[in-house]
Amino acid sequence: MGYSGGPPPMVSKTEIGYELRLVSAASGWRKWANTLAVLFKLRIVALLLFAAMGGAFLGAGGWPGSGPLAVLLTTGGMAASGASALNQYLERDMDKRMGRTRSRPLPAGDIARPVWVPLVGVALVLLPSSLVFPFNPALSFFLVSGAVIYVGVYTLWLKPRTILNIVIGGAAGSAAVLSGGAAVGNWHASGVIILALLIFLWTPGHFWSLAILYRNDYQRTNVPMLPAKTNLRTAAFWVLVHVVATGLAALLLGFISALGWIYMLPVTLATAELLRRSVRLLGKPTPLHARSLFMGSNIYLFVVVLLICLDTL
Image (tube, rainbow, N blue to C red):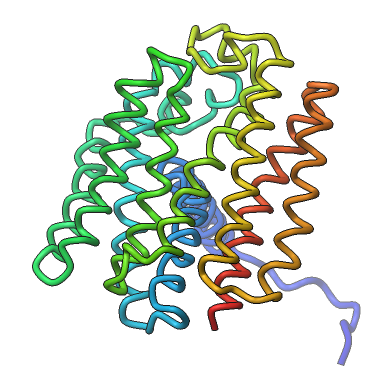
């Protein structure tokens, strides 16, 4: 029956206060969850784990098994999240001066007492690495190597000193692929090695396109990122060089790993599209074209790894 037209039911102040507290608590939890997601760079971690899955599928020559996959995703997710937290803690002062990063939890002051961040970061790297070491030392090695390259080699050593920072820092992503191969006991398989090389070659072009977009930020903070230290056309040229190398690695992967047309045809088309965007950026290095290439490179890597998984199955 519908509303009869009588006076509305009375709601006590106690009930209203209880509902407001529930809404406030839910809002607080959502904010805290979002803070942790940004602190641990969970979107980037998800991409690394996806690349690691590609290594596992190539190493196994098909379905790697639910057990090895679960171990890989758990340990890899923890180690990558810990390294990301350490990176943000070390760069918190620089992040305050950049428009792209000043809203991150540490520079924005969303975490009142961040002293726990490096402790948790180190624990997230060392704990899973130590647990898997007795039965899979290769996996343990690549988990630690990825974190050491990202935090020690890239963040602390190379990034403040040389425009080659991200070129060598891209090896952290390669370690993720190798950890996938190690999870199935075959990290040295040719397909795994080539996919690791592909990630290494893909990273500079991907990041430099983003750096072109935020060139003023890097110049203001005096970070020696290539687009901030050269003219835009030179930066776009080196982006194109890495895009070409990435595409060649992707096509080589199809031949060496005996992947079929399910992989080769879409990857060939995706490579052509990525090259088109890169050539367009070279011809006109604008923020709009840099953003297009940055987004396209994300999609490209996703397509390559997805097709690896589908084709090996």
